[in-house]
Image (cartoon, rainbow, N blue to C red; front, side, top):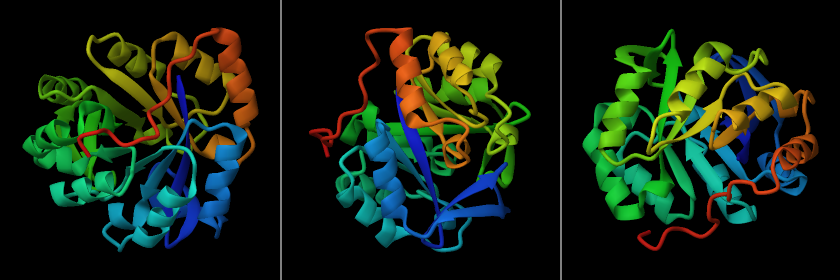
Amino acid sequence: MEVLAAVDLFMGKVVRLTRGQIATAKVYSTDPMAIAKRWQEQGADALHLVDLDAAFGLGSNFSVIRQLVRGVGIPVQLGGGIRSERAARQWLERGVARIVLGTLAMRDPASVARLIEAFGPERILVALDFSRARIVTEGWTRPTSITIDEALSRFRDAGVHRFLVTAVERDGMLSGPDFHVYAELSALSGVRIFASGGISTISDLRELKRIGVEGVVIGKALYEGWVTLAEVRRALAEETSEGTPAMDAEPHPGA
């Protein structure tokens, strides 16, 4: 199971939100590179960067993200405000290992199919951010009538293999993941589920691995010291002697 350390960027700082509300932003560092390298050194398989400024339509952290992609030695997964096919292509060409598409995917599913054809399915994740079993978009500010199951089925049929599934109500709450949803989705054939939101203990991670989750994004639990990456790595190693390979650091040949 892949372990991704979250680095949420807001106005150049590393922050964490509660339930996606920008008013709850808590600053953990003014030095994103130092944080990124800390998680790298402590054993993260990859970084999960989120550009909150872009997600909320307040600007972007373009230069910071470029520095992080160039400056760390582990793969970078990027989400937040990538709302055009052109922007998605540019980030993939700049060395981002994977991109996470939410609003763009819901608005223009054909663009996701084109990106998969150009770069390969392993470099594209569709974000299934949900609140009360319904998908939300636009930085979690716009609810839709689409259920998680409907969205996943639609994109799986279009060639999407990987999905980042986040329970909005649990994000930043350290209250535990929505195991029922993850178990249901992980049981479907042809998909790989990445879990985000609410992870707070080693037992959470063990259970997610048991039910077949492909990867986990850990955020607040790391920043608040509820778990360490050393503990995570040790616990997952104890579960099995053969872990799931992490994403390739090198870009796909189609890039």
